[in-house]
Image (cartoon, rainbow, N blue to C red):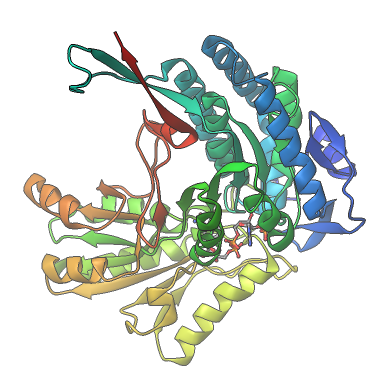
Length: 499
Ligand code: NDP
C-alpha cells in the first residue's frame, strides 16, 4: 500500500458486509427475487458487495408506499419551514457521514477519493441546502382578469404550486450520490414522495442515504430506494401508473425509450441526457488558462461527465502550442486506484464501459487517427483506460461524433472562429459548450451563437445550484437547479374568485 492510500473506515467495511435489501416504507425489505447483483471494485475488478435485484412487484410495493405517504399528506402538508428544517438536518447528517459516503463512492464507482470528497460530498451539500431552502420559497402569482360576464361581476385570481405526487428518479453511475440528490432534494422540497433507482453498478451510497433520511425525520414512505436492473426494475418504475413525474439522467437511447412510455400516460418528464460538448478556443485565448481549464473539463471523473468537453476547436495560430501543452499535461497524469489521491486518472466504472471506450479507440487506431496516450495504469484487473488526445480526427470517426464518456478528447484545428462555431454546432447534442477568449465582444458573440443549454467563458464543466442546467436538441428536456428548480416537481393550480 502506498503512503498516500486512504485507509478504509470500519463503518465502510461493515456496510459493505451487509446483505442489502430494498428501502421501502422507512424500513429494509427483502426483494421477491432471490437473485443478487454483484458490485465490483473498478480499481481491481474484485467483488465488493451485492445488492437486491428488484422485481416489478417490489417496485409496485415501493411506489404504493410512496403513494400512501403522499396521499396521507405526512410530508406534503407539513409546514414549509418544517420541511426545510428536516431537509437541512438531512444535509447535516450527510456531512457528518461524509468520509464514509466518499469512501463508499470511490470503492464502487472508481473515482478519486479527492473527487468524491470535493464533488460527491462538498458540492452535493451545497445543492442539498439550496434545495432545502426552496421549500419556504414556493410562490404563485396574483392575476387580474377581464372576464366580462355576468355584467358587473368582478374576479380575482391566483396561482398556487402544488406537489405533483410520486416521483420516479432514475440515477446513472457517473455521480451516483450527487445526481441522486439532484432528484431527491427538489422532489422532497416540493412536498412530493420519491422512489429512486440507482444504477445496478453503483447502488451503495443511495442505500446508505435512505437510512440517513429516516434518521433526519423524513417520514416513512416519502423516500424509497429500489435496486435492480434497468430493464426490469427501472422499466417497472417509470411505467408505474401511480408515478406522476419521472426525472431521468442517463443515455439518450434509454431517455427516448422512457419518453415514449411516458407519452402514453402523459407522465411529467425531465430528461438529462448525454453530450458531445465543444470548446471553441479563439486565437487570443490564454494558453495556460485553456490547458488548465480544459484538462479538468475533459478528464474530470475520467471523462464520465455529461458536461465534459470532448471536442476542442482551436484557431490555427494557437493550435501547435496547445497540442504540445495538452500532450505534456496528459503525459504528466498518473493513473491508478481512486483510494490513492495521488492518482489523477482512475478506473472507469465497469468492465463493460471500459470495453466500450476501448472499442472507440481501437476503431480510431484502425482508421489511422493520430492518438497521443498517457499512462496506461496498473495491469491488475482494474478497468483502466489511458488518458488520450486525438489530433485532428476524421469527422466520420465514431469517437468524433458519439459520446465516448471516457478520458478521450479531440483537438481540432480550425481556420477561424466561424469555422469552429459551425463545427461546434454540427452535433445532435446540445448540453454544454465553452468559448475561450480575452475579448468581451467575442465572448458575447459566441455565447449567444453556441447551441447548448450552458455556455461558459474561459471555463468548462463547472456547475452551481443557482444556475439552471439542462440540454438542447438530443441532450434532453427540462432544467434542473436555479430558483425555479421546484417547478418541475409542482403543478400550477389556477384559482379564480368572483366577488
Ligand atoms: P443508461 O441510460 O442505460 O443507464 C442510466 C440509468 O437508467 C441507470 O440507472 C440504468 O439502470 C437505468 N435504465 C436502463 N434501462 C432502463 C429502462 N428501460 N427504464 C428505466 N431505467 C433504465 O446508460 P448506460 O449505463 O448504458 O450508459 C451508456 C451511455 O450513456 C454511456 O456510455 C454514456 O455515454 C451515457 N450516459 C450518460 C450519462 C449522463 O450523465 N447524461 C450518465 C450515464 C451514462 P442500470 O444501470 O441498472 O441498467
